[in-house]
Length: 331
Image (cartoon, rainbow, N blue to C red):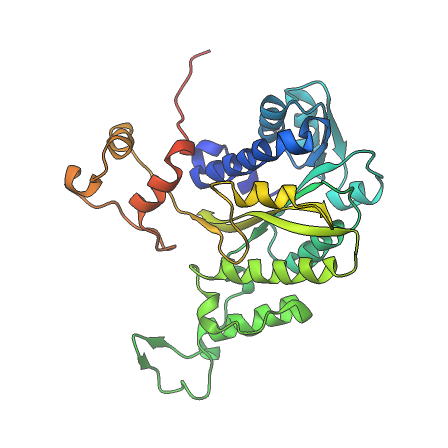
């Protein structure tokens, strides 16, 4: 578990919205799939907040939290919010290799390490063939293009606003250099049509999701008894840029889940993920934006855009119902 993954959600508002979207998806599926009978498996961090919410919203009793770091595992045993949570000191991969699910599962692969992204994607893809039909799989992947490395200054040329350095014909730009590294990293999963422009902070998440989709749909061709229904995909940044995707493993002839997902207001796929780039707001700003259609006329200032480039007002209006509200409570 990285240091970033242990940060409280109040310091990661976009991740908090991402989590609420996933919980909303599960609530959408719960009546049709009887999710309260499922086995939930994930990485809970030291406080197991995701497990508490899954239990509270869905009533799941069988839950397994997997952790590799011994001290974090000990904290989980101490902080366990629900007695039925099983805390296991293993890697997620070892745990999944050793279990034969008796019921459908909800499995969250919460990865943060970028260097192992190809192995992570391949493992997620293989899991669609090993879980029972009806299972829900979700993955979080690092989408920071800087994780591809930083070239030496003399290895690349510079190109800004159409003007290029004198060595442009002989040397790649930083984005072209990253594109070559990304191709080396993902190997045969490299999607056709990717360009240097896809290696920027704004677009690299889409590139990672394209690799993920290619791997999953390639794996799905090996199974005639099941189909994949993509349900949710997001791209956000709270310090580190991340992408997520969730799918349902359905019977080949099932149409109920597909219809449920398509009718859900937040349905999104790896081809068109939600961009979660919510602004940091004061309470007065939030209340003003919630209660007025013409926000620009009401507030005599512009909210700043992040390097993901989304309009903060548009994003807020889309997700305001699940925008996180944190306050101090004296105990």
